Image (tube, rainbow, N blue to C red; front, side):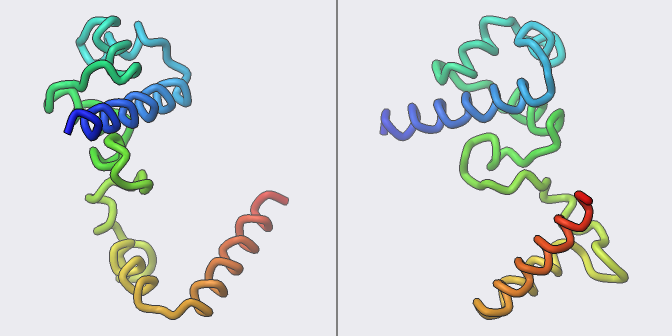
Length: 124
């Protein structure tokens, strides 16, 4: 059981440090936002300890990511609430995901190919 806790602590620490650095914040700046000590934040990032639930939720809200993402349980950064946002017409992002889950492998390949074409066209 200790190994599972250590693994979660380490995953969380790496994810937290990456999010903070991606947002170009020092530990001191982010600790102030969270209203915690810099050493507490350093311990989270080093995997030494985990934040209390309230602090974990504050981190989740600040970076607009689900707690599952922070804990390394999923790779999706989209907040659950955003799944009910409208994607197009009356279709939500959640509806879109459900439809994607129902299509076959070849169709998924085609959708992926089209998305990459769109992404490349936007870069030009």
